[in-house]
Length: 185
Image (cartoon, rainbow, N blue to C red; front, side, top):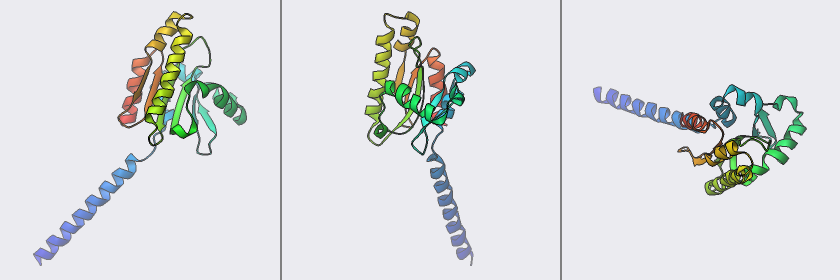
């Protein structure tokens, strides 16, 4: 009788462990809210003036922060698609998810992006974002020295979780550290 009870308890323990490990795998597969990560990583001033945009499940662009609330949906879609996305050089087949904030003013070097590359596209995403940084450096080199220095310090890196991160901003080190910490959580 003791052997039967011991065997039943052992089997119950195994089922409990299997159930716990399956739950933790499901939790780690939960997609991260990249727009919220960027929002939380930035200053209140950046959140007030610079919108963070992403592509919704319906394939249309959406945005938070900045002046995004002042746009009609179609107008927002058009501005992001035609003005803000082209400098990042990202094609739809290169990523599964992303969020970005970029200055469309030619007097400011500013871009922050988190991109989850599509399968096998990490190098392409990195090259696209590195091309943005190079373009920004070239634009500012003989124009605005302080913005040129910001562009020179820009980083394109791959997080241990697989996302490609772009940070081209005045408070570069703080932003990058905040984003990497949030992605690792």
